[in-house]
Image (cartoon, rainbow, N blue to C red; front, side, top):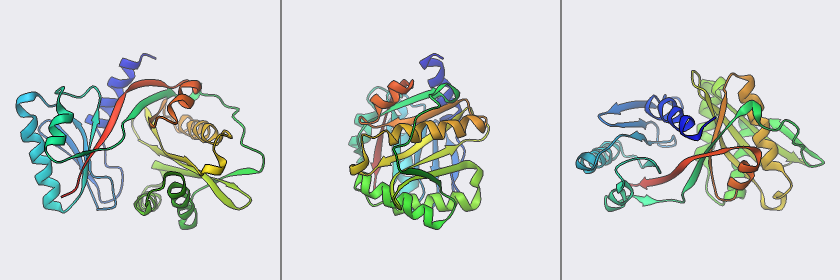
Length: 258
């Protein structure tokens, strides 16, 4: 499993050939850009671009005009291997704001450890209804300190429209949700995505993140996906490396608000 091979496969299946990730969303290829447009609470943005220096500024302006006309904020998901080399500077000059960079990592799902135990007294609950989604949002807001109602709406949309493409799980201790995570399945591809893994502060350092990663990887493998991928924050990257994940690239969200 070579990182270059995995990165190329990821770029082709999940970026250049991307499919809508929720109801009401559409994916379009406009020249050298692949973008998704949907409701305001959905993820809106540029998934892939094959730009060169002469055409980059015009392509950036075109995406700004598209989302501005729709009244939407959006994200340009920039990867470390995307061109041209100064694309990040061009995005900043056009009015985008850079968020924290993350590390794109992937692993063979079936090769990950199978015996990561949960802390004593903790149970995993599958999320199937609105009450479970509220717990996911609660954990996300407590773990990351951000308003996360849009994540709940996205998850409810997908559970209602196509539950086979998303799985969410909450770790509960004495009736309290203390950790949560999502698995997004991409039918017809080799990949499943690990998203939103977060643990409230009092429960960190007890192995919950590792347990949720391996739990979701088992589901992905059982559903026919060879690899799991994650955009890893600095805090989770060492844990994933110890589990056997490979680094494929970096990814930085550049956001634009009309």
